[in-house]
Amino acid sequence: MTAEDHQPRFTPSQECRPPQQPDALTDSQTETLDALRSHIHETVVKTETHRRWADDRCLIRYLRSKKWNLQEAKQAVQESMLWRDSYGPNQPDKDALWIETAVGKLYVSGFDMESRPLLYMKPRLENTAASPSQIRHVVYHLEIALALMPEGVEKLCIIIDFAGSSMTKNPGVAVAREIINVLGNHYPERLGKGYIIHAPWFFFPFFKLISPFIDPVTKEKINFVDMKKQKPKPKTIISAPSSAAASEIELTNGVSSSAASTASSKKPSANKDNKDGTSTDQVNLLDMIPEDMLEREFGGSSDFVYNQQIYWDAADRVLADSRARLENGASTSATTAVVQEAA
Image (cartoon, rainbow, N blue to C red; front, side):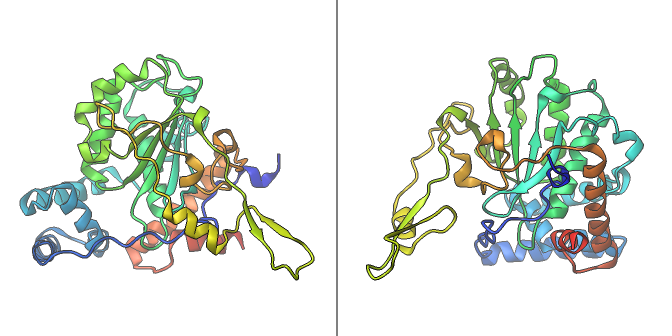
């Protein structure tokens, strides 16, 4: 193990591509956005920090979550602004969170193919009883993920690994409901994908209890992954010209134009929908996450090992940069700042 293994992967790898741009707004949606922006910026915001937080991308997320209902979006944005002022989600209290961050039961490390940060959750490492601090711990990592998003990225991915977990280590229904409430109310349209791995038998009754509180659109993004069906990353064989000395070149990371054409012409097998609205085990993680971004136990090559102090210090720099961007209008992204810090 090296010192580098303890450094969280806070910068995307070369395989991470820019996100796909969302569809353009319709004329009706543009009018609704204009009305929401006018209301929030003219009657609700009190500081420039508020104004920067409630930019068009933020307002569109709230509108989408409310099915473009203007009145509901007005109320939701205002409530979130008040919540952020009182809760201080991007200003973590180290003393309050230190015990929660001790064992690495949650952490952000790596990005998926679409440059969305990966938030790992490992219930088997639960070390505290149900309390508001557990909610703050989740919010802390959500803020880290948001701060790490490259320009144009608005969503994150969550990997929940239940390996080795037990009923006593599983979060209670009350805590789960509160987390769902915070996510839905104050972080709308932020989940890109959710991968549940090694789900034990007792998880499904638990999921059935909390399922009614999960938005149907969010539920469709949750996939139950079967690790036994995971496939290694394929190697691409490219035939060299006949005049070349070598007859074939094997590339592990490159893709030839013919191979890319073949791959793009193949349609992925359709996911089957469960009765609860989630997707079944048709996801191959290495198709979604670069190998060097995914931890080795899930088929990747990342050897990241959580270290509390190292992680806290790295996250603290990321959150400080995020606050500076909100408070001062700094243009440097969090991922750029991390690269500069490392250099």
